[in-house]
Amino acid sequence: MVTIADSISKLSITGINIRDLDKIPAVVRNRDCPILYPRPDGFISGFEPDRITTGDGSSAKMDVRYTLTYTFLESPIGSDRGLFGVYPSFVANVAKILDAILLNDKITGAVDIRAVDVGAFGPVADPAGNAFHGCDIAIEILEFVN
Image (cartoon, rainbow, N blue to C red):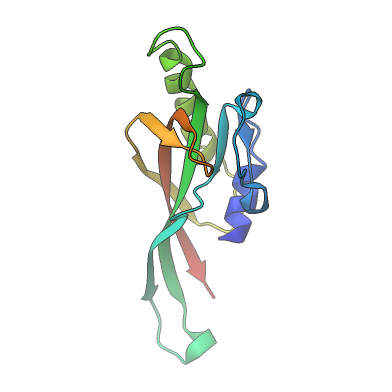
């Protein structure tokens, strides 16, 4: 999980600030946006190990599936002209993020990656509770263990 998060943080997506687990912002400022970071409350979910061979402890081979959830913030609410002024760039940036993650062969630690859900576009709070145009992006990971 740490390796995958590190790989995602090293993706180069023009115009988007991507943070790793140790760089989750306590407060997001306008100059930080657009920003993608691991969701602090609920980053890892749906952990499902599936044993595919017999054996004791570390000798058994298994598939492990889980979901990593990221928060994407386009801009602070009220920083643009009109309620939907940021919508075109917002949609374009989410598409760039999905393309970069799903079409990238350099994300280490995972065997398979797929988007599970892009949350509703709307008000999303940063860790300090400030409102942003944003959404959550959930990514399902499949790893082979052993």
